[in-house]
Length: 281
Image (cartoon, rainbow, N blue to C red; front, side, top):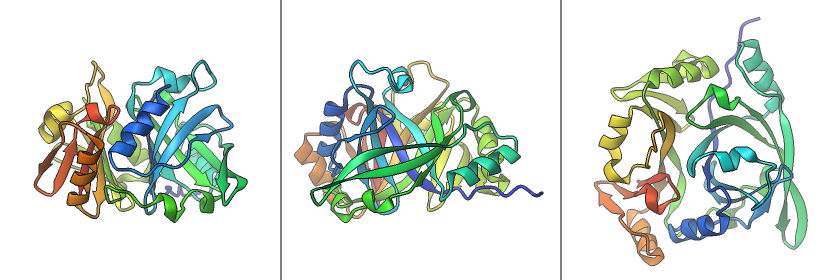
């Protein structure tokens, strides 16, 4: 039976904030993002989301003193999860298993959401690559069983004009290793060789895997502190309707060290919980 590769689409990206959810939410609001009310997963974690047109950014945290999600507290603060979309987590799991791809069985969980004074459950089903497969951070697929409880217009309007995630940037001493993993997952046609490393095309977004030296060339002092890591998720490019709106939001939020460079505004990782954020039109 021929193997059918999953189609690479972006569902969301995850910024790990450990047990500092209050501070992280305040920071991202000051960056100009509208955040959803705090959510509490049945798995034990909690979050806030910045919803965009078809994808979103998640701030993920552990409850203080709760060890039910040890991978949150053990991971560095910053960008630590890239999540692909799937309409059927079980089918995606089966397809990747047929190609001898290490992947964990689907897991279903939920979190309560209040809509119009009514409490409902937003339900998700995920299938995850083992952490050992991707030392740069977590990679998994997410199926939404209740999309209407997540993508709501009142949460998709942001003072900074953000409308979507254009790319994620991963630093690696050997970009070809992660590029090979992506090719194994989605087929060689989905991965392109670049001067800096390689790039996975993810719908209208992309994941760029670059060397640490190339990351420094891109972002300079705005890049995250690598803390001796060989592989790490480093930066996000957020598409915005207006760089003027971005600048107004950053000024109002008291964000320091940002700079407008050509057709983008760059926010240093130190001002965004460990992830460099580039706003671009």
